[in-house]
Image (cartoon, rainbow, N blue to C red; front, side, top):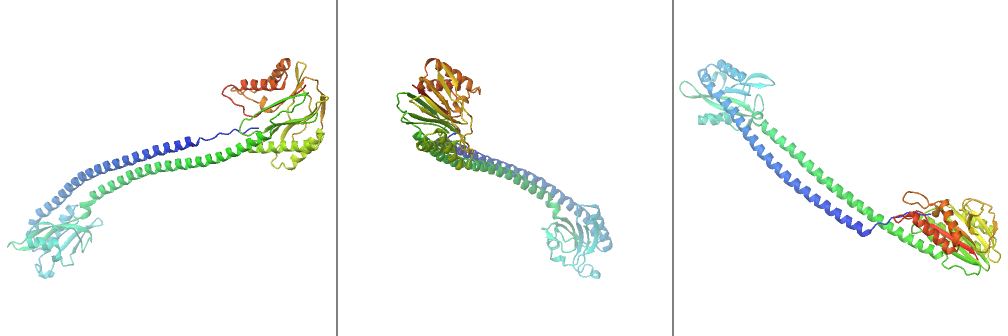
Length: 493
């Protein structure tokens, strides 16, 4: 039996690791550079767009502030005419706020003691809140605030810095103030109009929100790309390391198989026994480093003990099973002469240790070279051929069970060989050899070749060589056998 194996070229694998690492490193650098330049370009574009949008927004804000200032400036004369009539002042404030939706609120903050009947400080305030317009009096000392103090002191209109309203809306706002004068030209009050800071900044907030979101999306995509490359590199390195481990394991297995192969070659007989009535030749071509096939022969005086076998497992298991079976054969042959005893004792030994349910097909023979009497016993193996008188015929065998399966009472068979007769024994690798078209060599083709040999030259060496060549031609130049090719040929001279 055979287990096909493939070895990994260590140097080739390391070369692939280096090349792949270099490619991924270059790809990573290119991606990072692309990410950097893309990021820089987008940032530049965003900054330019932001500047443009800010400029546009500033123009809108300036237009809004100018609009509010114009409203207040144009309304100031009307308020100056009604400075002594607080009810008219309130009505004017209410009308100005109601007619101008951009205004958050408006007030006329009189100078201290201008209306002593209403207290030292008097400032009616009209403002928007929750969609409604409300009226109230400022309850704090407004003279301390810039929107009042600065224009009153400088007698000049203008916007004040943003501040938090202390009464009414409680919002962050900016106020435009205009100084109101009485008929004598004396500063009498400050007319104001309030704009909430949200009106002056919401577009800018949107710009930065859009820029931030866009930046986050682009940065996320670039980071994802880099992480993806790093993941590919990590997987590649992990895969290469795994291949390295597998390679080392394969090297270890290959070493073990080499040792097993050497042991197998060492135990197969290397010299053929010498006898006047004997000519013998054998061949074993393994399909891989180790073989599950074996043959053996031992000459005791005029008696030739021989066998051929094929174990059921593969790889190191095949090597071990072959060694055990062949050792069992040698041990029993050296202890017993009768072939039936040898077979039964071998089978009992193999059954007793066969926890892995392995077995071996086996054919054993005993040829008395002084008489030509052949005693043989088959254990599930293929029919041997007898080449004699120009014919090649299968000899009659009892099937029996293979060795190692179960207890069995093996019985032997006998036949008489003529001088010049040749036995040909083989394993199933011969007839199961497949060519490129998946056609098997087959039993019929084997029989045909053996008949041709029987008509010309039946010497064991010639028989084995002819069949080996025929199988090789059948396989083709680029094909190898998937199973071991084993043959044993014995002539009674």
